[in-house]
Length: 120
Image (cartoon, rainbow, N blue to C red; front, side, top):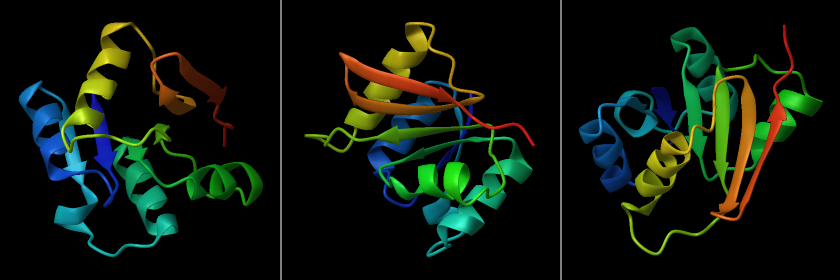
């Protein structure tokens, strides 16, 4: 899985995804302090799914018609430990949830919603 971890994703979660074989590009490592629009553009260029705790991406994509990335996973749940987001993402993937082409909202194991991303 090719993902772009937004700056708010803990490094412990990034390390967990990488150790599971995911191709993770971290905004904190390559584009510190980038705007949300710049993160969207980077994700699109790199064909990556954005992983974030930032809800602004929905508005940018659906209301303001910014470039659409491969997918977005908005983590609404608050992690208890820094590695928890990796466990959530790996769990979603192991259950067969497709993240590419969707805006996925994770509010907890029993609350995952998806909306198809607009096409260009």
